[in-house]
Image (cartoon, rainbow over all chains, first blue to last red; front, side, top):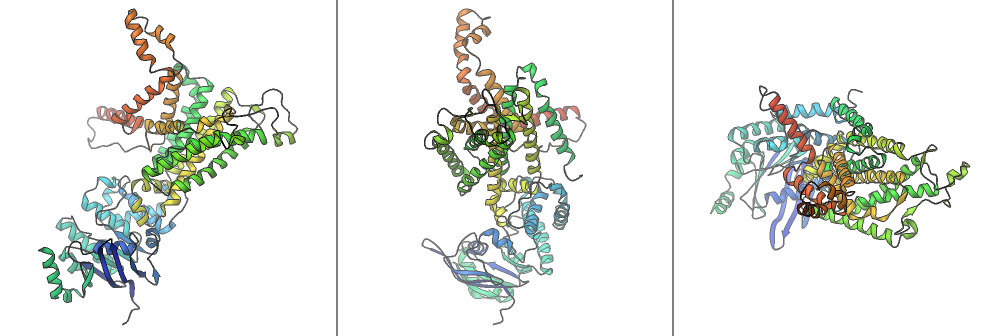
Length: 254
Length: 380
């Protein structure tokens, strides 16, 4: 098998919580520049898998390799600095800061690294970072809200801002945990367009999503997770026609 | 220079400087225009400004900052005893020592956050307090307190051929630092401390501290190692506390362990909350108000109260004296506690929130034709 363009490799990962086998024998390969969707019924272990990749949870066994670097055992901030950003299921934002500052902070993380004691420099002199953040906010259609407190945004806007916070870092890999949950149909379509635009720039994405409309308009490859195992893997068309997938979804619903 | 400081920041800084330097004038009608009290206003103002960098910006509530204040005092007095009576080396020495002390304690305490962090700082401060009374007596002189004597070595002064007669007192370039000289010396440091705090709050580093307070998880997933940020804030605020402690030793060269007690740590928390957590000016105002009322209320006694209530019939006057005497003198902490409860319940943002509300009300009544959506931005 040709593996040279695999950028993320989740290798034989198991995760147990006490007696619960949340992830079993997960082997997942994400190719560079592709959008890889992970779908599955509730409780299938999708978020756990994302948490293992991003360093929030340590796997019980197995490891995650990103572009030749083993991620397992590294801290979340180190993993981010390697070029992996994540949008959370419930937006993780700086609610007490302005929208503009929310987007400037990740840009500074990208430029300055994990720690910099730049306390005698004025924030006003960071014109480059500011312009970059404003440009990003224009991209996601939130430039008019830049002075608002992030905590006062609507739920959909919080998600879009969080996406902007990830995109401004130009990550090599973007992990999206239900990026359109709680959005109106209109906002969902806007987000899909935005994600397609990123794809054309060659960013690799792993996306967890319930909304099949979103999945089939974005994904190049789909992995189906049920009860902690990958039960199917392949192109959207292959997965759509797979009887095991239909069974898992119907089984999950009943 | 245009990006060095924004217009608003510059006005705030200049306004603050003028208010501080003119304190002997505008506080005289309130009976607070004398040097001894003014010095304390400056010293506790510095303490509160520094505390706010940790508590207000970064969101870590320390209950042990009096330890750094005490360490600063001891370090300054030792500098007076061993090196020279000049105040500047003592200040530098005190800030360095308290910074190192804060580095060690902060490193250990910041392994936890929230209430566990607070309890750890409290435990370390109480340990320091007890050590100062017991094992460390050779350094702290225990209950008596560390003071200057004629027999101190003062190697630098001796090398310069300076001799003293009478009780040694701290100096600045040969000038004694009593009275108003002492006040302006402390005022200079408060203005400097305020300036640095303002720079920090307006810097990228300051924004990171606010972001840590707002959402530490997001900071980590954004690629920031939050521990060194919090530790830097802890050390900076410890150095501020040490500077304040050193100034107290300059104005009154006697360092005692009671400066490190938890009540002293609690006092700076009260100052910050009373004035307004996270604002620049609030903690200073909180410190001034607490020290002002401490000064007035703790000096009152039953005789003064009896004279005050003497316009009432005898029985009623006696009754009022009995009641009010519980709130003054040593009981002034009761008044402080009540005032604190009232502020936290009705003005959780402290005095600065009160000021903002009043300003907003004025703006609304002043320009009722203006857009009603004009909301006040939280002023920093």
